[in-house]
Structures are given as C-alpha cells and as structure tokens.
Length: 553
Image (cartoon, rainbow, N blue to C red; front, side):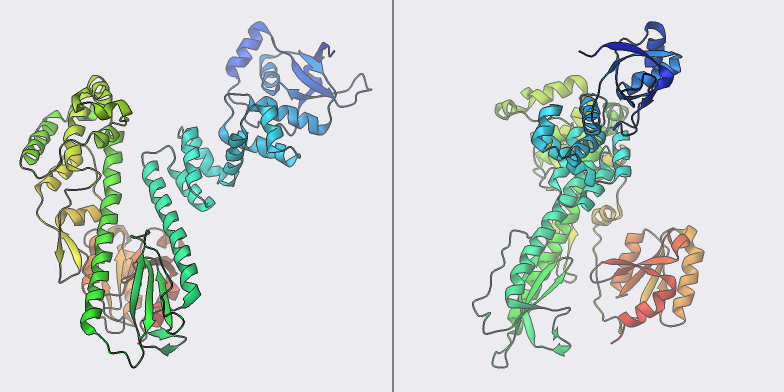
C-alpha cells in the first residue's frame, strides 16, 4: 500500500503533458495553504525509481503544488506511485474530467487525447463517468475555431448553446454561429444558418435530379456557345423547398436545360420548330414566376426583421419599460382601438410568452389568458413589460399580419399600403431604443426595389461608385475619376447605402462599386451585381478590365 511521504518542493516538477494548462487564480488556495497547510496529498512518480535522491513528476495536484510555492512551503505530502507514461496521462485526464471548473473545450481536448492513446469511447465513458453521447459531442467541438470558442466562453455561453450547434453540419457554419453564442442575436443567426443549410441540401438534391435529364447552362438560350430556342419549363426556388423535381415524361425525346443561381434552379425545354409558340401562355408563366419570386423575397425580409424585433424586446429589462410607461400607455390605447376595429389579432399568448423570455406550459393551454402561469409570474416580476408585450403581441405576431401588401403590376414588386399599426410598432420600438435597418426603413415607407433590366452595354451608366461613408469620399472620388476615363460612371454619396443601391437599380446601372474602410487597407472594392445582387471583391487596379469584360455586347 502506497505510503504518504513528505518530499522537498524543489524536487517536485509539474508534468509537461498536464491537460490543464490554465490553473486559474491561486491566491485564495495559497492563503488557505499558508494558514492550514496542504490537507490533501499529491500523487507523484519517481523519475529514477532506484535512486534515493531522484526528482519526482506530479501526476495529481498541480494547483496545490503551484499554490504551495506561492505560500512559501518547503515540502509537500505525496503518495509515490509507479506508472507507465500512458497510465500517467490517463490518470491526469480522468482526474481533470471530474473538475467542475474545467471548460467544455478543455474536456473535449482531454477526451481526444484519450482517444489518441487508443481508448474507445466506451472505455472513456467508464473511466470518466460521462456518457458516450456527451463524449462524442465534446470531441466534435474541436472542429471549431479555438479563438472563437474562447471568446464564446468569455461571454458566458452555456452547454445548451453549444449543443445547438449540432443542428449545423459544416464547421464553417458552426464557427459563424459560435461568433454569436452568448449574444442576443444567437437565435436569429442560428435560424438563418439552419435555413441556408436546408437550402443548400435542397439545391444539391434538385441538381442531382436535374443532372439525370438536363444540361446545365450559364444563361437562357445558350448552350455550349450556340444559340438554342428554349422556353421556360419550371422553377425551383429557395423560398419553396417543399417542391419536388421530377423527370419529365418526354425527357428522352426532348432536350432539357437548367440554370442555377443563388435564388434556385430554372428548367428550360428546347422548342422544336414544329411547336408553335404561345406568347400569352409564356407571358402568364413569366408573370407567375415574377409574382412568386417577389412575394417570397418580401416574406423572407419581413420574417428576418420580425425575429430581430422579437429578440430586441425579449432582451430588454423591465426597468426600460418602467421608464417609458407614458409612451407604452399611448401605445396600448392605439392597440385597443385596432383590436376593436378588427384590424389586428387579439393577444397571442405564445408570442407574448416568447417576448417575455418565458414558456407557455401545457397547463396554460386550457386556461384563460389572465390565469396562465407565465402571465401571473410576469405580473409579479416585470409588470410593465407584461403590459407592453400583451399589446405588442396583438399587432406583430408570427403571422406578421400587419404587413398588408398590395401588388404593383408595373414594377412586379410588393408595396405596403397605408398601415397605422405599422407606424405604432416602429414608434414605440424606436422609443425603447430599436434601430431600423435600411430594409425596414424602406418597407415601412412603402419603398420598393424597381429594377430597369438593361443589358450592361445599353445602360446609361456602366457602374456607380458609392462611398460607404462620407469620410471615404476622397478615395471614392479617386476611383470614380479613374473609371470615368473609360466609360460613363455615376457617383452617389447621399443617403443610406441601401437607398443608393435602389436609385441605381431604377436607372439600370448594372454594377455598384462600394468603397469601404477596408479599401484604405487592401486597395479593393465591393462590386454588387444589379440582377443577381451578388457581391464580389475586386482590386482597384483590376476594376476597369473587370467592368469592360462584363459590358461586352
């Protein structure tokens, strides 16, 4: 049986492979040891077992050793054992796994080290006391960016937050979500990434089917450098992921083509000379496609900002609402009038609970609103916020019903009709500190994106230079002056960048060039395509050639 012996502290040395690199704050432990001594012995192995004057390597007790040195102790109680190098590392790992202050990432590193030594997941689970599922999840975290992980830990990220990352497949998406963990935007960012992931999967599925019967093309009417008389057959957009692609019955007799872009996949069918065109049918189909795309685009923007508004309210403390009770009272009066007039919904309990950061329990489902558990709890803890959330939930719920829209047949865009409910919502949110985005500003004002789809060669301006800030005017003017020597180029620095994009879209400018603060460092600008709205980064020295290539007729 191992004996406890006192060993001089200058003959003790920390293990070089100790998994726990950060020993934390040792001041309290050092003070305790100075007052009462080391109450729990260290576990050590001799460097030279047969040498009575050998030094010792610490296996268990690194924090006690470090604190004892601070306290000025000259010797420490130790249990001397003999272990192989593998046994030493395993012992340190298992001992550290039991510590409550070990970070999630440190646990992951420890599990991976045990795997590297040849232990199976089942063996690690038995030694450490963690479930096999937990071990696998922890190890997956090592795919994430270490620096981002450290920042997330400093923001107080919870284990449940990390578990949410399992909903994402790619390490790239997980790292993007990791940037938002511990912030108010995490749920919104996560939802967006999950949505994009679903879109990518569906795009891959559609592409796999399309490859079986259709040829991929870059633009409609052109295949392998030759002109082909083709007509629209079907569209599969990112806004309708439930739509299934099937192989047409005549695919063996007629050539099909497909074009893929950021919005989805469009199928075309080759028109044979014997087939007579039906202009009216084609016009109807084109209008249907535009209608569908415009509606989906509008809904996507509206939903994204609904989530931002919801998260904003959810994160505000009750004290903010208490400060603005006069404005909230007027908002409640206006809301009551809207409800009585039949212009909006009644109180939405589920949404109201979300705004309060609470849950609607199964027991609440059968209760009147006033008797629901979360209502009673909120009335006691945050009554001012409850009053606001009740009224707000009647106007801005999951259905976003206040976004009443009218179709503008001239511009193929949705516009907002006059809506007093919308005004009330933004008035009260801005009073509470909410800042509208450019997209929200435009929707609230009834603005629309009007696009003049001219070929770049026919557009009056081939490009427009837009400084992100007036502080960048000097650099932007320099870029504009350089491009103006080769072709007509517009310049605009008035208003938000979103409004300037819209103005250029209206006059048919195919490319908007944004000069931002990074431009001063890397001599590059961002180019936005009018039709696809895709953005690329291009060196200023390469701009002229890039645009010249794009505007060829």
